[in-house]
Picture (cartoon, rainbow, N blue to C red):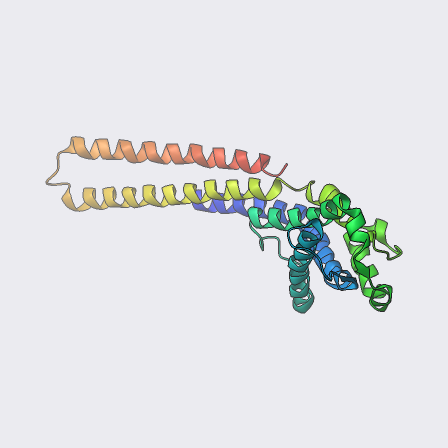
Length: 238
């Protein structure tokens, strides 16, 4: 009963995670695809190392790799694809795109922007933009779009779900601990029952009474933990 109920709670939490995170991952997948195509419109020639534009180049390359993966796969990222720390690192790099451009806009204006390249892929780029947010549907393509979309994604999409994965992973660790303790308790109860069955003639009755009391207490304790786990499930990712 304890295992069935804990599995029911686990399924409910995962359904809630899907409901919250699936739209986010659709936007994230669209953003990295957008970066893969739109990033090719910029040419970072003779960029000095350890400058804002160098960092921008590296962050765009990292995001473009993710975009290539999703384009080849043909699907959005699954909701359990990234750990919270990995997703945070990706979204910080997206924010860095805006941050680097904002802090060195003069340097960014010196980066070559190929309008013909953007025009060639305009239909795909606009499709990805509209999937990031409807506000970008039919948006004209220019060099400033890179900073605008990146800043919008981080501030208006990622920050809204920033705590969801950490909360879910924290709850998962608690659930795994609960299941492990439950297995240990069940094992101890089975051992106690087998001992009583085969050695009842050799062990004083008081020992059996004490063992039964301990087993009953552990079951009650684990039922309390199950109620506590269910309570946490109701508050996680609110």
